[in-house]
Image 1 (cartoon, one colour):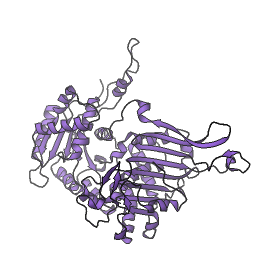
Image 2 (cartoon, rainbow, N blue to C red):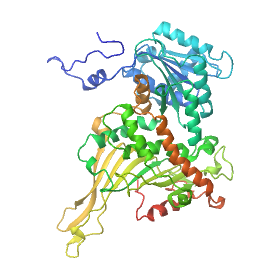
Image 3 (cartoon, rainbow, N blue to C red):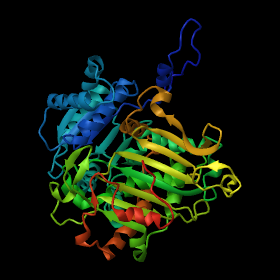
Image 4 (cartoon, helix red, strand yellow):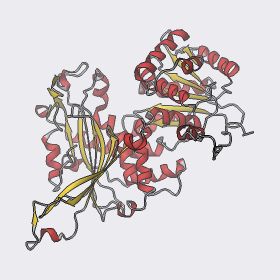
Length: 533
């Protein structure tokens, strides 16, 4: 018999008369966590119904969770267990990746509970403690806890402190027992507040108990970036300044602030997207090969890369960064309002909804190869991609006056990794056009996830929640990783305060366009151009 928490031995060869189902065999080889109680603070919020519970249900449906796993909603809103179950069922039906089946749901719903919690009041955690004790007694969760803080950033430190005061931060005295704390972004507003938040969390939780979650790292295509780089012998030798001219990372959104004007006024595009999502992609593109795939080894290499990024000095801010704010325009044939017309946004707001910047990495691999980053709201389409442009050939025989080549300049090679949508990888290279003359044109070699693996990828939260239960921190940000990303972004924020935008210049791009003219000019000044998505 397998020890507690371990999977039973996998049968590697089916009897001759049986046909192996590769999907079922794959599931059997997955790691299965110990039973636990997943406690979601802020359970009446949108994230719980749209993402967290549908992800947990998908894991249960795929056989990756013990049947005794419990999900406890915790919040100030009064709600019965049955009302919570009904709301979560609606979320799974509406937003879930897998179809809701009554037989699976009936078992999953038995573990759904709700507890009213008052973070401020004396005894405000008693109802939660009682529900957790019932889960341990009736469902065998064994004191294992996963606390998910789906609450406003201002309350994270306070809730973590209260969990410590109530003794809920300590794991049971049994093999493999754990208590993990999951913290949603943003992790502070700048370097100083990020450090303050870490200090607050460490008063009650050790660093190895804290899982700072960024859903981008749970995406299959982001994880595949490491496999692409370090499991293939043909790319890593040319993944450096000698062969790569520059890297472009784009996170484009066609939506506006979607009723979150108050939040966006406090954050802006730099804090909301660049500090976490984009800096994580920069680290994965630029990091050195880890010695193994252990969590700390991988995170060590990411931190080294982030430390090598040269901060943008105040005197360079206008030359190396561009801010933008969208005005009214057209998206998919529909008229959309400008940022200042959104609910909760002041009439004269100067908050950036678009950022473009140029980063230099001061190490041997990337010196002289810049990283160009851009993100914005109300752009023509939703797309996230990493585009690597390789250097041109040192000498082209096709450009010689004596060559009989028809056509213009040969385009450089591109490698494009599409994170979303249409997940996949494209390699652009030159080829001869069929015919009697030498005509050269760029063509694409494509890999598409959907057609190659014949199935939808798991949602990012599925992978990340499962990793939290398994204690695998590879895809989560460590405290020094967060601080290094904030070091870069805080330098930009400080520089922007030195050079505030001219109120007469905002808004400076129309909704439905690819950002302000200045964003195109500043990369053109280096003799380059943004890739057309």
